[in-house]
Image 1: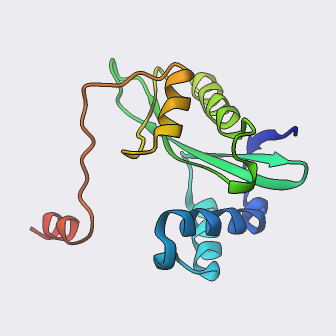
Image 2: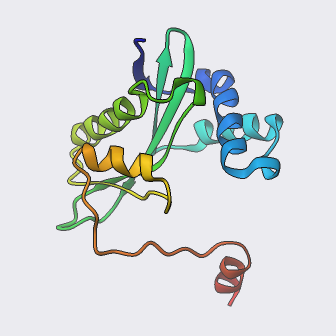
Length: 159
């Protein structure tokens, strides 16, 4: 099947709702947010975002995947790197090259924006995604990814 990749716009919100609901359910199961919340948050993101880029993959007229990249500054010699914050391909379109096309489009956008590096993280145990990234030339780093969220973030931010 053929598909295309392009930058998402606010007019894509209705189609993105379905894909994002599938993503939320895939990762969070019963704890996934509802359709109204998805629609509201997507709309808010498009209305307030000025730096990040969302790329979408379409198979004919159906949205089947998305990827979001964000600038990271500074990245060595006060350059900008780009970070793949999220990538998701609908279950119905997996193993068709959509993920690879989205990764390549993100790299192309990084180069177009004069980024010096393209970074990402991958969940432990997501061997399929890791294999794809490594096949496309990604290299492991000597860094460890850490996070504050929930109560830890509140305690740190209020302390």
